Length: 91
Image (cartoon, rainbow, N blue to C red; front, side, top):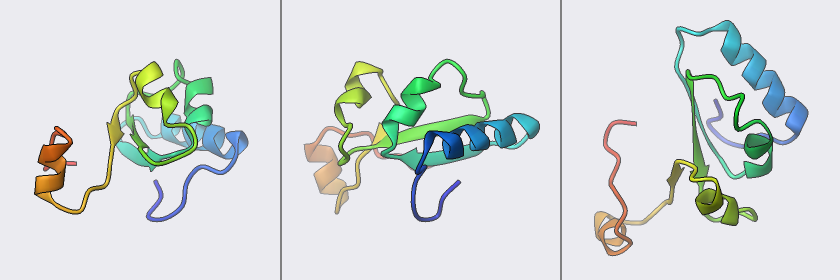
């Protein structure tokens, strides 16, 4: 959804949900640190939207609490291995 930036208000997040619902055959994805917007609509996320929580924000505690799919940016494969993170090669 964003090449740069993030969801900046609940209204903006909700507008994206409406757009996504109108295009059920299109797969959407977004990395986000705006976790409160996601959590407020956690049971309303369309199946064609893949949200990925990005570590390093103000709301990191929600990632484990709500079992959110997540990612962390690392500098190398070795760093990912040290953190015991799966290396995603198809997203």
